[in-house]
Image (cartoon, rainbow, N blue to C red; front, side, top):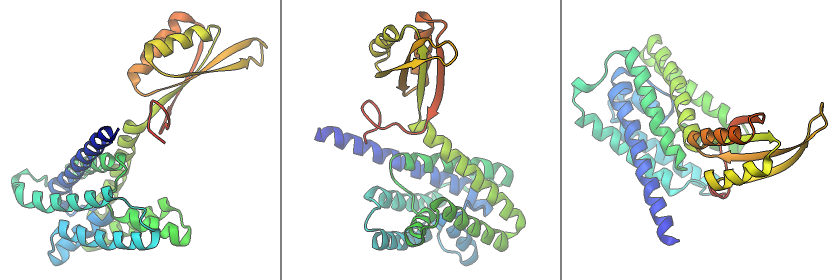
Length: 285
C-alpha cells in the first residue's frame, strides 16, 4: 500500500516537472522574446524584464513566494507542497532555458509565437493542474479575493489577467496588447482541453429489451460496473430496462456500442462526456 502511494507520488512529480518544463519552453521560445504576455505572474515578470532588466524566472519566484506566504496566512495552509515545488522548478527552468537556448531557436514571428507559445504553455500548465498542483500566480490572488470578499474566483482571475495584459499594451504598444490577449484566450482553451482529456470519461444510458444480458457482457468483457434502472415509455407504456454505465476511454466506448448492437440493434443509446468521475475504478474521492 505504501509502495503504491510512493510510486504514484513519484509519477505525479515527474508529470509536474514535465509540465513546468513545457511551460518554461513556451515562454522562452515564443512569448518572452516577443514581449507577449499571457497574464499571470509570468506576464508581469516579462513586462518587468523589459522595463527594468530583471530575470523573468527570479521575478516569478519572488512574486510567487509572497503570494504563497499570503495564501498560507489567509487561507490556512490549503496550498500543498506540490504547488510550491512546481512554482520553484518553473522559475528555475525559465531562467535556465533562457540562457541555454540559442537565440536562433527563438521564434520572432509574433503570429507564430502567440499560437505556438500559448499552445505549449497551455499544455504544460494543464499537465501541472491535472496532478493537483499549481504554477502559482494570479490564481492565488483570485482565491484570496474569493476568500476575503466572496468575489467569484473565475471573475477575479479574468480581471487580474486582463489588467496585466492591459499593462503590456500600455508598456509595449497596442499590437502587443492584442497579441497578448489572444495568447490568454488560446492558453485558457488549451488548458481546458488538456484537463478534459486527462480527467474526462463517458457516461452512457442504454434503453434496451435485453438489459441483463448486455449488463453481464459489459461486466465481463469491458470490466465496467453497470447500474440497472427500470423505465417505462411515455408513449408505448412498455417496460424497458435502462443501463447506466461510465467508461474511461474512447476505445471502451466503441467496444460498448458494438456490444449493444450485437445484443439489441433497436436499443437507444445516449452518450455524454463527464469532466470528472470519482469512485471505484476511477479517481479516488
